[in-house]
Every structure is written in C-alpha cells, then in structure tokens.
Image (cartoon, rainbow, N blue to C red; front, side, top):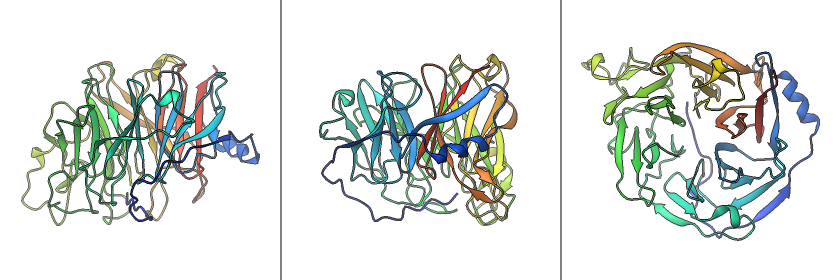
Length: 374
C-alpha cells in the first residue's frame, strides 16, 4: 500500500482547543445497513465528524482518543456509557500527521511522522490548552510509509515502527523498515524487528505475550502478488524479509537474487493481496461469544491500485488453543465496498471495557461500535 501525505511537513503550531457537540444521526446512518456481520452482531456509530480517523486508544476514564492523518487529535468522551460519544473534542492541532495515539499513566502519547510527543494529565485538560512534552524527536521525516502506529507493550516500553521510504528498496538508513521500542521517557531506543516494509498495526498475544503485526506487501507485481502478511515475532532481532522476500515465498525480482529464503521469518498467515491490512487487535473482551476470544481481528483499509478492489472490510484470523498458530482467515464484517465504490475504509480497532469493538474509518470520518446482542 502506498501512503502519501499530501500536505507539507508541519512544524508544531500553537495548540488550539475546540469542541463540538457530537453530530446527531443523519441519513448517513443508513450506510450501516450495508454492513454484513455474523448473526447476533450489530454496528452503530460511536462518533461521526471525526476527520481522517486513524489509531484509537482509551484512557482510564473511558475517553477514547483518536489520531488522524490530518493535523489533529480528538477525544471522544462517553460519560453516560450509552455506546455513543457525547461530543468530539479537538485536543491538539497543527501536528504532522499524528496517526498514532497511546495512553499510559494518565498521559496521551502521540506519534507524528517525525517525533513522539506527550500530553500529561490529559483527561483533566481536554478544554485547556495542553502543551506537549517532546518524548523523542529523532524519527525520520520521510512521508512515504511515514504514519506511526504506537502502543505500549507488556514490557512497559513504547513500540513505534518506521516504514520503508519506498515501494521496494534497500534503505540507506538502518532505522527504515523496522519496529522499534523505547522507554516511556524517550530513552533507550532499540530495534526489535527488521525487514518490515510498512506495519500500521500490531498487538501482543494475551496468552504468551508474543508480538503480532500486519505488514503491507510491495506494489507493481500484479493484482495477486504478494499477499499482505500477519506476522508473529518470537524474539527480538528477527528479519521478516523486506526487501528480499514478500509473504515468505515471493522473491523480489530486483533485490531477492542470491538471497536464502530460509533466512527470513515467514508470515503466520497470508492475507489478501494489497488489502492494506492495518490496525489489528486481539479480542480480549467477554461480550462476544467464546469462539472469538483471543482471536485476531484485522481492519483491511482496501487496495489502492488493484484492477479489482479488495479489502474494505474487517477480517478474522482464528488461532489454535495455544495462540501460536493461525488456523484460518475469513471475513468478519464487510460492506464498506459496494461494487467497486467504497464509502468507508476501516483503519484501526479498539476493544472497550464492555467488550464492544470500536473501528475507525478515515474515509467516512467516523468511529463505529460493533457489539454482540445474541
């Protein structure tokens, strides 16, 4: 998947604070009738008017934070717990594509293309003008595959990927095509995975704490090659193939010559070709039926240059009882693509405390809530 940020790189502007009442349901709600889900599941709007909604994170009080590919970060409080945000609050603006958001110890961490910043005591300061603390500012400013997905791991460290600055190449700087981690204060950056072309989604197994992540395959090898990947990292320092192999067994015609396929970690599950698999999550809630627990949900943003569009859905990867082996790959929710026209593009997921599943959409500027009614 090719990601291009169309605006020039932004320098942090003075923060503006704004909030609006959450939009009332409109005729757009009828789009949700197009979504097909397994029996017993329903989908509704958690929030609308959330421009370019991307990564999701939740604070201790239940407020949901939304990163964007625009220049803003939003907060979506749901104080009455009715399954719909009370309002859409703009907590930061003037940022450089702040795709990534994470919450730790009451602070909101935001991943811009070139740096990570932090807003302390964010829940008490939504309507003030919070000033960010710069956590780390030495990330590359390359915009191609530059969106940052961030999350704190079981080890307490903040994980941040750096995508390849190209469709396929041997990057000059070793930081590219990697997943990295650092301490919460910005110190101790280290690389934990290599050969990762562009991951915009990862999570840790609730069973053995292994890191799983999606990766988008290269373009220009045709409609059906290579498959996108779901990977499982079992130890730091593993190499997942880029730019030499894709999907485990597709040798790159330019860079793969003379390389040993067995050197690189094969994907745990091949996904659809060019589906742009993004912000995956293990389902750790208890609202869904038992067969969904500890399984992997993957939003597929959708192909951008395939002759017949593919993706624009949420997929499910089922794992064995140990949580270490993928058993199958199937569609869980679809309907954002009608024929060859899309009205929405799922991006990231978030499991709420009540067990419902939030889904961000950067085309329809919305966050949905999927719940199980039985």
